[in-house]
Length: 299
Image 1: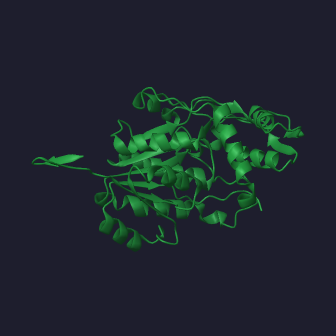
Image 2: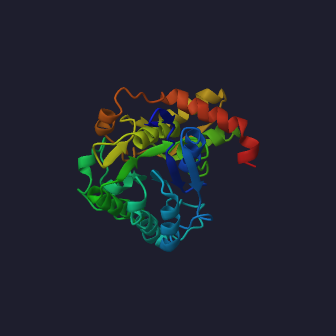
Image 3: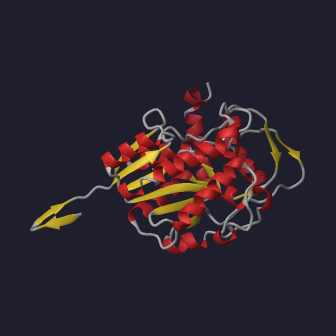
């Protein structure tokens, strides 16, 4: 809100969300559209690989905030994407946006714990652990290079994600949605290996993103996670209990996998008093959503 003379005006921030059909983008748009003037675009409406079109669109719209959720990753088994293009496409989309930095207020994008190098993950990785190793996979390396650029920028922020879950996620490949699906459909549950992961409810992510829209952060890169890891096995058992069904559950590989978790002290210094949704409440809400929408999602 601002005032000219004795007249008050409401200023509504203009926000662009890329990756419009994706899991995170859909949740952000759904929950932020009543607070901001939000435009959510997928690649059919704005091809981020085409710099000329990106520049023309950004210059003509002058967004206060660009939230870059679009990513090119290859999910095992189900993806039709070309794995050889992961590095190229992720970097092209990112840099085609950052080259327009003079025409928007700030840009928020989502990094990944993969930029720490999967082969060298350790529990509760801090932001300072970044660059101890260079990722060997294309996806992690693309996120690693984005962070290098972000550290030198003045209006770009990396919200580094670890385990995410929520409605609209890909139930075929993601642990919590897949277990919810199998429980809803009365199917046996099988996971490859037990691991400890730091899982964040997408509804918490939306609140955090809203804070970053409204405020000026002190740092350029933040681990956005709960700071607490939970075992796959425990999550499956919780979902089975929530379902109230007698479902079989098997773990293929009995060895414990590498933990994937981050330290969130920097984030919590910014978001003073922020409380994450309890994991039991989160997975019950998600299970109920899948149960209510199974005819639309699974058929």
